[in-house]
Amino acid sequence: MMLDDFMHLYDDTVQTNTRFVGFMGETVRFDLVIMRTDRFYGKMVVMDIQSSKFAIIGKDDLEEEGYLEFAFGISREAAEELKFFLEQTF
Image 1 (tube, one colour):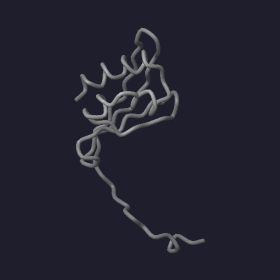
Image 2 (image 1 turned 180 degrees about the horizontal axis):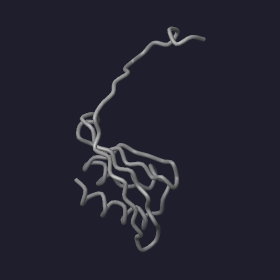
Image 3 (image 1 turned 180 degrees about the vertical axis):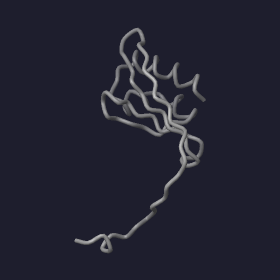
């Protein structure tokens, strides 16, 4: 298979604002990469370095019950801590 065999949907290089942050909550430690770009309709790409999981998160997603638990595979308590932190970043 050659590169020409692929149907490219997009191939762009964009500027990002990337923040690396680690913090310890009451229940778990978070080591995050938070990336902002002009894509994703104002949402952030949030990556958990420890679990290698990521999600595209906006303010509306923080209000979605169970979203953070599912996206990052964390407990409800840990999700509440993460939600509190992310609310401060918007």
